[in-house]
Image (cartoon, rainbow, N blue to C red; front, side, top):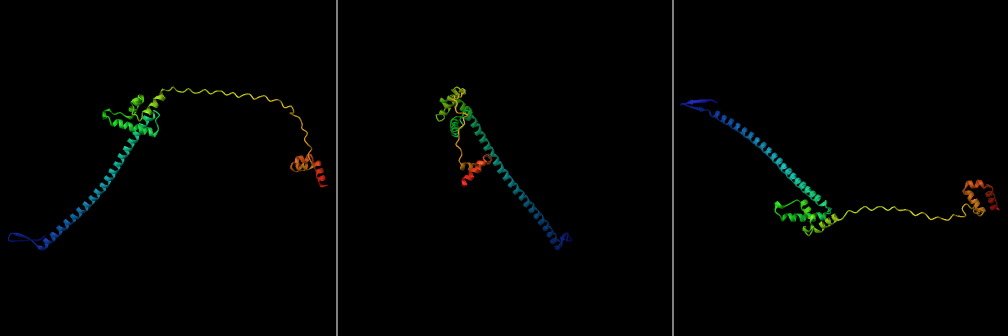
Length: 213
């Protein structure tokens, strides 16, 4: 940049000043464009991270939901074990006992509450103190436990009666005089039975000849 000294002052040529200002503006514009590009890239990164965070939040919510489902299922299974060991396996019985248990526990302070197994065990040992809705079920358990076990019945040996003696057949082995075959029956049998034909060939031929006359 050229300068001029005049009266003790330094002056810059107008053309040089305009060129310097133009270069300065170009540099500032380039920096602004670069800053804008960086801001855009940063915003995209933020948007991507927000999307990932949203996905993480969704996954976290699903995990919490699954944990609640597992805890609920485990609680139901534990309660089923506590009730089914007394032979109460019908869904209606289980639902009634759970409802009565929740009702009883809700009326007590938290420090006095017990789990269903302990609560039910105390009522089974003394059904008179049980709520009236489930008392018959618990009384039937106590009644069944008080009955002695049935002894297995001894299988009776069945003796088959001896067959009655039949009188001997007097005519066993006797030969019955069968009527002599007619000519027609002799011929028919000879036509059907080759061995019979060979044994009675002459008789059959004679019968055939007699039929022709």
